[in-house]
Image 1 (tube, helix red, strand yellow):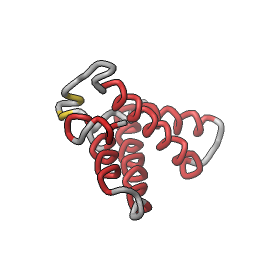
Image 2: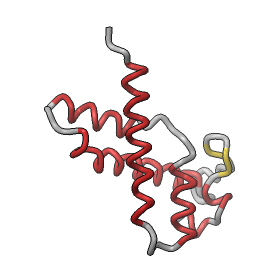
Image 3: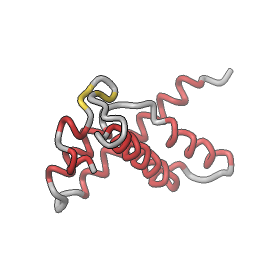
Length: 112
């Protein structure tokens, strides 16, 4: 029988590791912006969009290594959409996943 929970857990770990690697190339980026990006991205989440990307690639025989940048890009785009959804001009939410939203933890300009 297929172990879906195990499959998801393994991919979540790989995706989180790949996302963590992104920060190693950000030495020249504005510190506050990188902090806000990390804060929002590391707030948690199921990583379902990148998992679906990896799963689709497996179906057609593509390498997980080759598709990981696209999978991470999907998660970054999704996180961006959550940050913007929380802004005062949209939902004006104070919390996301039990933590202050990006515009509350930093400021609205940084969140944008």
